Amino acid sequence: MTKQHKTSSVIPAAGIHAQADAYLYEIAVRTAAVQEILDEANAATQALVARYNAQLEPLGALLISAVMALEQTMKHNKKTLFDGTDVVNLHHGSLIHSIVDKVKIPKTALATCEELGFAEVIKIAKSLDREAIEKWSDERLFLIGAERKPKEEFSYDLKKDQPCAKP
Image 1 (cartoon, rainbow, N blue to C red):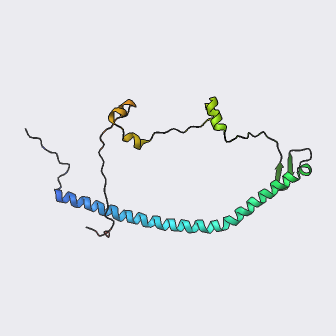
Image 2 (cartoon, helix red, strand yellow):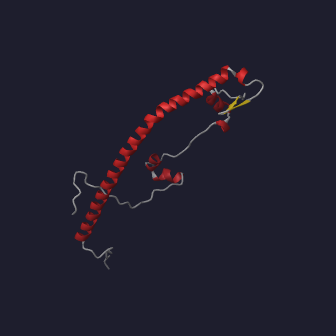
Image 3 (cartoon, rainbow, N blue to C red):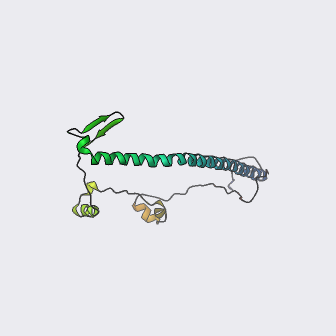
């Protein structure tokens, strides 16, 4: 008994090629249309961002300057402003003075914590390198519980130098 190949459609091979080519044409045309709109949107976005950045930049610099001036005023005049109180309520807001304990961590603290075994304060981000693992032998994959399985993939490639002319 000979093995018979099942066909998935009743369209002849030339028709299937024409249908696949028509889909490639449609993908190329739609990709070009999407890219055209994205380019237009990016240009409009860049123009809008540039317009508002031109307005925001000097205002941001003035805001930072005002904050620094207020902080210096509070620091240099703390006896006058905070005479026996931690909060001074003014017409446009409140000034707050507090003394808090801050920890100054030296640059050598990480190495010292590792030496002393203080692992609870050390952050470690672990992840697997999939590309490196995919190069391993099947025996090595088995050791970590991984396996290599065949996977069917389909892809396409559009001709870049061809104009979008309908077939």
